[in-house]
Length: 224
Length: 261
Image 1: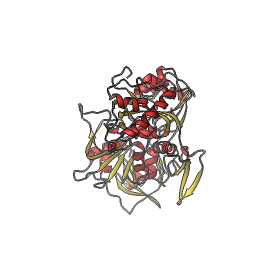
Image 2: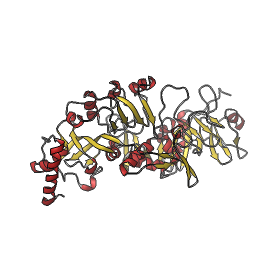
Image 3: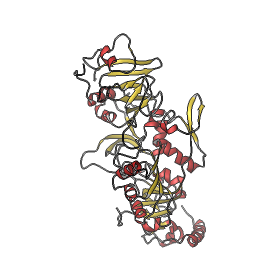
Image 4: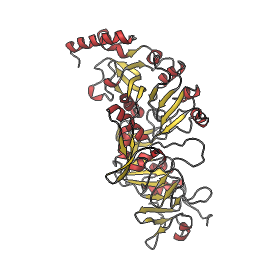
């Protein structure tokens, strides 16, 4: 079972892009979420928000086009789309925290069956960790999607009954998209919506640390 | 926008301030009349703009993602040999850059930050050696705590961080059915910020996303010192384009093209 192909990071991002409604205001976090912008369906236009004070962030700048005063939250030079605006960091987080963004997508180390998220510090890792905007985003986004691998490098489930890593927020995650599955968090627990091509519900359950519910079936993930 | 009568009053006020603050008249290109009446905030050098900041001061530093850092003021402050400061900033420098130089020279004792950063090697070493202490704050809450200080608010309740390490030791209560924690204002003695343009009164504009933390820190600190690319005469910035009003700005220094950074 571990030898079966899983989704690549790009494919996780490609599947997550399908969750963004046309016209939505969207914040993308570090890691896999940052890859989503390149996979938007052609008929969908969204407004990307950056916590350093940009709405309407466009594609990454190409060589020669970079302006170091115009960077995203990962310090990467970017461009703007028509209709973009700038504002200071407090207003940027007023948007994340105050429920003004339609969708936020964050990376994750662990997600619990109650939708708790841990994504800012690995226990035992050197240094104090770094929170950045994650806690504000987790607390306030209308819809929070987490993109991550389904298991750790050692094969341990990252979807668990209780997070053991330092928490980012309680009961904040709505949907988890991994290299094996699309899972919604609802009041009763985790609902398996889709599985990776070639994977069964039972195989995904075996690599998940909390019980998965289904509607009797879970179709394979498609990318369009 | 300043009529002659107001200008005379301002001239008198600036004269009084000049007596107690030993101003460093700007030697730039603005008209003489305006310089004499309004120029008391304009400093002729980076060194003079930071020369009275004492050891142990609480200092906010603007900037995010390499943009909008007051790098020249930081260099001037570091070269002066200041020590034991509390630094309030989003991160802890990028190698020798930004705040990195102050950690390199062991000038920081305590940090309030949200994202120390993977390239803040001097900070990371000194944190590991317990030479520097850190209060880690969610980024938006860092902004709001500074804004509370600016606004004369004594604190606020938020759902951000509930149930996490940042809630430790903080008062918790339920408001509107939601668990919340009490967050307190962050005050500072000084803010060192970067803007694109200032007029001689201290009205500021910022370039692109180099705005970030700068306007918030300008409002929160007792004394705000801004380095700019260009100082322009009063009236040269249309009032509706001003992002930080001059009331929040105390010292202005032209930094572009000078010897630091």
